[in-house]
Each structure stands twice: as C-alpha cells, then as structure tokens.
Image (cartoon, helix red, strand yellow):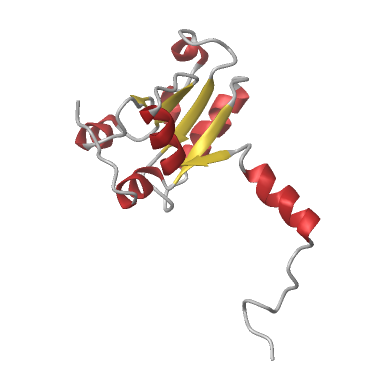
Length: 131
C-alpha cells in the first residue's frame, strides 16, 4: 500500500545531508536569531522588509525597517560589504523575505532569510517591540 508519505523513496543519507545542509546557507530561524541577539551578536543585520505601518505595529527588537523596494546600494553603504543581512516578513504565507534576499544578492550582499518571519517569532514566544 502506498500513501502520500511513502509514495516517493526517501533520499539517500548523502543526498539528505547535502540538501538539508545547504539550506543553512540560505536561511536561519527565529530561535537562532533570538539566541544570537541574546549573546550580543553584531555580525549580522536583521531587515524587516514589511511596510513601515506593519513594522510600527510590532517588530523584532534591533531590526531595521527596509521594505524590498527600498533595498538599494545607497541604503546599505553604512555597513561593510561582507556584512550578513537576514531578512524577514510576515511569515510563511509571505515571500517578502525571499524577495528582499534576492535584492540583497543582486547588490552583491551576503544574505539569508529568517524562516517563519513575525509569525514564527511570535510562535516561539518572543516579544515584539514598537519603538
């Protein structure tokens, strides 16, 4: 009997390691960002790519509001060219974080997305700020 879970054979261990391992080059999660901030990390910048109105209602403490359309070279000049940017948006139902990461990559900037976005942040029990 087949079902939706077993209808396709699982990848080999080597393929699974390559696939899932590679994902960490492109994404991080809310827990890791929160943990890094709690340890005083200053080796990445978090960009909230939502609208200014959404940002004002609540955002990750330390995040900078920079909507996708505003991600331009002149706005990034204040950071070294090798600074890592982590983008987030509303959550899994939103592709703004990916659009922001594409824009950063087009500008030659290292980037990742924070999977889960604001929804994931709240789901983890982390506070939002309105400052």
